[in-house]
Length: 148
Image (cartoon, rainbow, N blue to C red; front, top):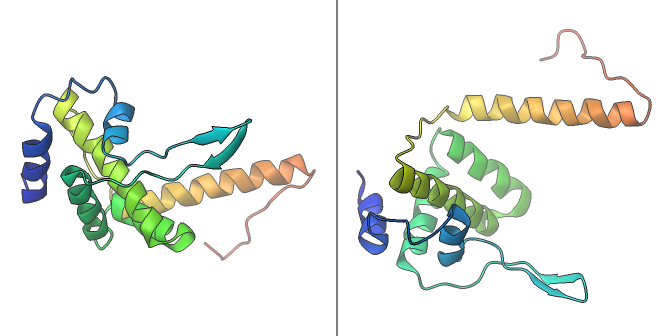
């Protein structure tokens, strides 16, 4: 167990049953987006500010994991390029919090598939969406030979 894991355990404890679901846990950490709605219109959906030390540890872990060759690191890098580093840190910290909750509460073991697996799965998702959108417009996509 790493230092970050021990800090999180010391703050949360080993019994996470006081949070009925992972959504309650991430909300307590202020890693889940809020939702200010007035008249059916979403006014704001940003995350709340927090002095929670566990959230600070998870954010630090998210920045660190962004430099690794893991699936979560690839997730962080893809989001950072698309929406910016600050939002990517929060999203990755939430993902790590979900893994922490599932490990501590249910004993689910996490096996990292690696960045290559994540990138290939992302590529397959994007291609499937492109094929579906082309079909909606009456077109068919074909792969160009010799290009991967």
